[in-house]
Length: 222
Ligand code: HEM
Ligand SMILES: *[C@@H]1O[C@H](CO)[C@@H](O)[C@H](O)[C@H]1NC(C)=O
Image (cartoon, rainbow, N blue to C red; front, side):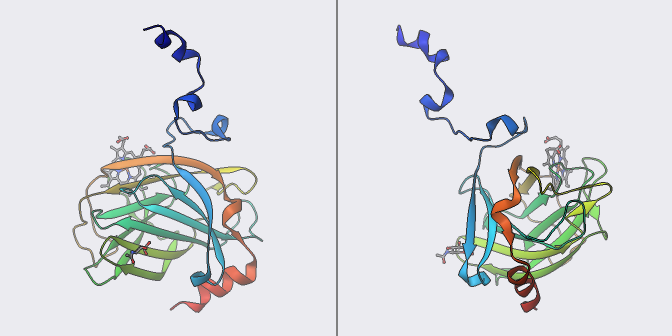
């Protein structure tokens, strides 16, 4: 049929493929997702850069203080909302499995408790515990469909001579597994390789918060 001949000339958007106005900045490994600004009254007005791929993947939300400066140490907040089918979910602050801080979270039992683990990988094998970043669990929960964990991280904004980009897009990556970790109550637990992983790039602007809002939020929690 003749129509087929013109299809390659059409922009992808005409075929309903996902588009992104920042497409030329995207990493080749990019997994299409939807980024947006998410603000929560339950979080004292805290706003996050939210990244959503699909109902079967975790949603990741990142918040930072607006007075943060490039390559300096400042606390960051990460919220992960995962379908109950997932055993663990990981977030890589520099966009790669290796050579950047990894924050890995998983549920611990059926009652909403969770474990957060700071990790680092020098190779693509089980990441080891990373003491260069420390995590404080702000909240965790579980219902019939999802488990969720929110942490404040000290040490995830900068590492070696790199850090989150505050002057343009930051590249993050994520991974998760449908298998549970070996010892859910232990932040040093081993676990098996991801069943899915991906990358996205986005400026952190959506997740910037006044210092007061940010500090009040991370300090009011246990
Ligand atoms: C037992 C633990 C793990 C093992 C054995 C493992 C192994 C691997 C291997 C072999 C690859 C390259 C092949 C591929 O692309 O599939 C890979 C890629 C990847 N892994 Fe892991 N991984 C583990 C945990 C993690 C964790 C906790 C994260 C946290 C975010 C992570 C993030 C990624 C990402 C984003 C990629 C693709 C991009 C890249 O290579 O940086 N992995 N992993
Ligand atoms: C279950 O928990 C998730 C994450 O907190 C939330 O987004 C969702 O609305 C909750 N579902 C119900 C039915 O309460």
